[in-house]
Length: 246
Image (tube, rainbow, N blue to C red; front, side, top):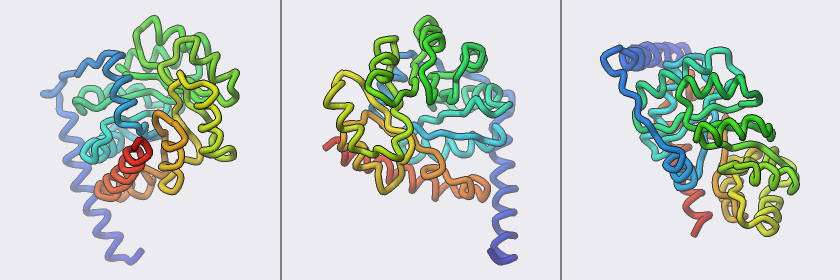
């Protein structure tokens, strides 16, 4: 990157950060309440769950707004980050209408912290029965992870709204097709190995939705505040979802 490009990028970051930080002003503290039924229906309808590990609330808000403008009003914040609850809380207060979930929810304690922050759904790469039980008790959408047919069915019968099949890197769309044929009642979300090249195939194989991180929201696009780039990638994923359901 040339010195001129770096200077332009830095200027753009300062300008956008000022706008984003102003969104955290205390005058707008309305929190939009979304029911479990509504959240579940919207995830199934949109078909994409973007995952984030933001460094700040301002960064998360920038991404959430770019995604929403492209027709993907959903974002999952990883609880593996120390400040995740605060990020979720701020998004809930300042990104009205956007479904905000908590990812990497491996313990009941993490689930409670996410719940207190206002998370609309819990997601995990593994199946933890106690977390699924808490989600059901609190009427929150739950997306546990699983891989084998036995694990998928155990998570589903425990009360999951969707089951995240992860990792899909090795098995690919063919595995989703096999699971769908064996367990047609289970709503599957493909995760791992989901990118622009494979998204359509995963949807055609029977996935209800897709989860994507870096391939949907590149770190560079966040740092350079490239909202158009993020929006274009989101639209491509949405087009793949739509085409895969036709």
